[in-house]
Image (cartoon, rainbow, N blue to C red; front, side, top):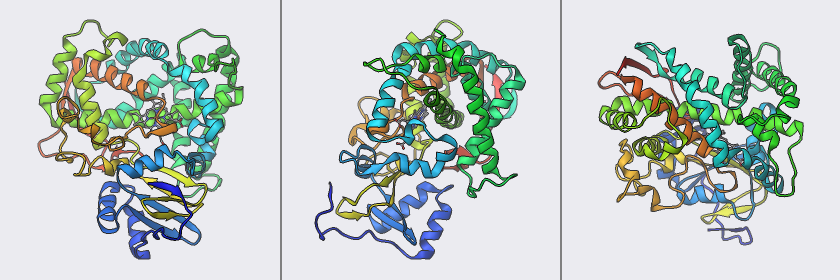
Length: 443
Ligand code: HEM
């Protein structure tokens, strides 16, 4: 499937007209799936857009995901692709490193994501989820901002291990949100008053904030992620420098926050639209003891796991995975030139009729025996990407979603009006365009 480009037998990637390419780019954000389906049908597995020397190559299907994510020959760079998107505000993060340097950092950081570490995070999280949900009142509410606030509060205690006052928490959250907004800005000039400049200021604030805490965290034996990262070392006893820890912490906050908020919101939507599944999950949660979901009980909520997998299939928080071609290479007989931005689309593969039965139906049982539709191809289900950069927070995310839903479903039932369909902005991070209004009632 992949090979160094040695022969002129390689095909040129189809381009389509400039007008079409502009239309595609404009619609890519809110209607990524529709654009991919049309392009795949019209052009096949690859299509190119170019502006002068800059080329974007969109690749479709599970083999394309394998090519982009696994990249055995080391043709593609995650760092150079993601640098262009968020390097100024989230530089130094794990996804913005390649090759041996990436391997070195990942090996050290892995210690903060071991089972024993996740158990510690889960114990910190349980009571904080309860506190967060105490503030939720029955009535009509927008689910997306409520989950955004809850996951940020959880991040303050689990990632940072801090009891921040409301004012302090708001300052950190404000800086963080400004940095995230800047990473998605269209105009990337450091001009006072512009979103991008506010993001750079937010990044600078977070750097100062983390640096001041470092000495205390270096000495701490606490279970929060910041302390765990300070203690983490590889087999040779090498640790991360102060600068590296700060860069990783800022990136981790971002990598965890918007993705988990997105997953929880989409899951709550589907459970509102499928009350029978909400009931099934409530029953399995009510059968367990204790106010919080114990780490040891994570495997005892299989219906949450199925519903979460299916939700990540329909609404992968990251609908696209980009890489930059470091050298000329090829995919499926097409020549990929050095310097092109190569993009694959988990959201599209998750909806291909070749790989899923009735892909537009939310049907969690497709992930259970005997169907196991996700096993039809190694790369047809990739909400957490794959290869060297596969999401490092996968187990953390699964724990957090189960823990939040466990408490939510035992306290509340929720619904959306008949016929309501959540309007989704599918990229860069999947989210409801209307905040997802739901009706919340006590159980
Ligand atoms: C439902 C929640 C989540 C989803 C869907 C998700 C998805 C992803 C994806 C698709 C990537 C790879 C992007 C690429 O290949 O270009 C990734 C990378 C990463 N994620 Fe997640 N993520 C989630 C939650 C988290 C959480 C909770 C954390 C941390 C606590 C986290 C930490 C990371 C890190 C560190 C990387 C970079 C890995 C590397 O470069 O080696 N993620 N995530």
